[in-house]
Amino acid sequence: MRGEMSLDPRFLPSFAKLCAQPFDRPRSKIWDARERFICGFSEIAKAGEKVSAKTALKKHERKKREHDLASKILALPQKKYGLILADPQWRFEPWSRETGMDRAADNHYPTSVLEVIKARDVPSIAADDCVLFQWATSPMLPQALEVMKAWGFAYVSGAVWVKDRIGTGYWFRNRHELLLVGTRGNVPAPAMGTQWDSVIAAAAGDHSAKPDAVLKMIEAYFPSVPKIELNCRGVPRPGWDAWGNEAAKESKFRYVLHADVPRFAAEGWELLPALDGTHHGEYSVLMRRVEQG
Image (cartoon, rainbow, N blue to C red; front, side):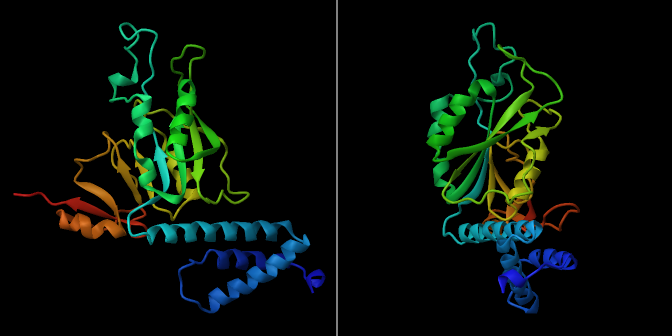
């Protein structure tokens, strides 16, 4: 039977539409049709008759794994995150703290020594299956890998952010930062054909601010899992939680995951209508703190 099967290219658009259906829908004729498509395409892919069918099947399977991972994490009794984005406030020691502090990070935000960063209880908020995206600079790469290990993650890959202007440095004038990737447990890598370029070119903003392109890449890789940004600057993105001195703690507005709405409502926050261009309603809702008095 397997050797007799063939793939009509006319069915590929239909297969793509079926695979795009949400996984949490009740069983239906559409769902059953998709499963029949998957079984048939699996046979074709195994026979090696069509590489495109095999690639589509892998994308579908990876999408389902990411959704299942999110469902498992969201079902936990205590809140955990399946994705953590960290931008540790590295303290880089100049040759002289008397003459070399004019451009130091300490002039822009509080920094911490390595042991303090390593001691942060990040493992307590990480799910058993979790991915860590961690920013680092070239001089601090050894320390960044120490932190990743201390937090319970194993390094697996990395990308480079190339800026539009040059900075300072001892050996080289730096124009890039490193985005390290670590995992714990069983985390699905992106499906073949969906990976981003490892070089991300984006304009540099305020001191230590990171490009939105990286957040969009992360959301494309992991659209469903609960996410948190450590050392966040400003208001968190929709669907994200945030922690850090520069997170918008005093903002009257913030996005709140559905599960946290009762807690925020009890603390004096109210729901607001969706804003155009946001993920409002899919993972989170917009809330406003009600002024007292």
